[in-house]
Amino acid sequence: MGKIRRGGYVFITWVGDHDPKHVHVFKNGKEVLKWNLEAQVAIEGKATKKIKKLIAGLLKEGKL
Image 1 (cartoon, helix red, strand yellow):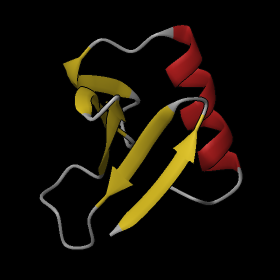
Image 2 (cartoon, one colour):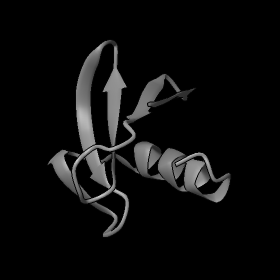
Image 3 (cartoon, rainbow, N blue to C red):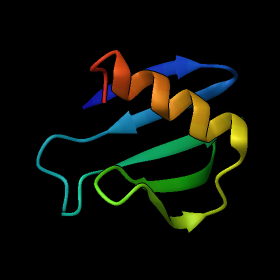
Image 4 (tube, rainbow, N blue to C red):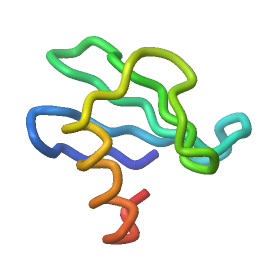
């Protein structure tokens, strides 16, 4: 499991989680987005520009 806090959000990935590779995004303890990291699309929820920018940064840093 990886847990990263950025910009008021918590990004969580689980080792061995189902395909496709994705990240769960939480705000104030509630899941707001489940993001497909391979296709770069939302699986559940709505991705704001801020969340997309944070995910792009985390990918660039190799954290996701």
